[in-house]
Image (tube, rainbow, N blue to C red; front, side, top):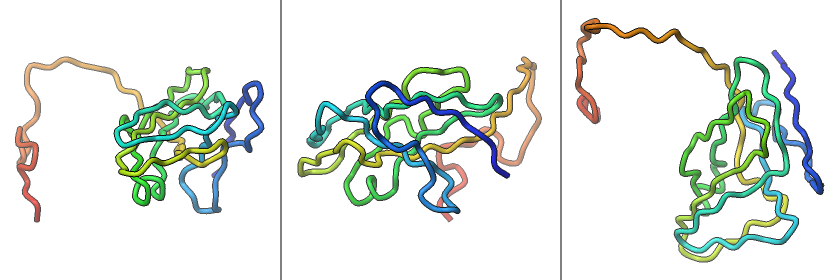
Amino acid sequence: MTRSIQFQRLPGNDLPLPGYATAGAAGMDLRAFLPGGDVVFEHGTLRLIPTGFAVALPPGTEMQVRPRSGLSLKHGFIIPNAPGTVDEDYRGEIMVGLYYLGIDPFTIHHGDRIAQAVIADVVRFDVQEVETLSETARGGGGFGSTGLS
């Protein structure tokens, strides 16, 4: 099933629209909008990188901004708040926080694919306060309580 999403190109943006690299891709590629020049990352650098686009998401959806596996595994970039959430009512520029774990300096160039955006349905719930919760076999066990195997 295909649904529509609206992107607004911000002034000066010469980049292609966010899009899917393959027919089976779950995420759309987001590119670095760096008309003022490249950004060099040193180990431990955290930067907010603009994409040059704003978005109008369909009602009942969110955009999840996730790392690109190649940029993460081959070069050491993570998105510290991954997945970052863009709410359906946000109309500002989509920005991507990148944190660099690599050792040698790494340069992000204008137009580089830096993240992926997955559009997901959101279910909203009525919130209720209760005196007790139903019992389960797991109960309150957490943080590894079920073991590794």
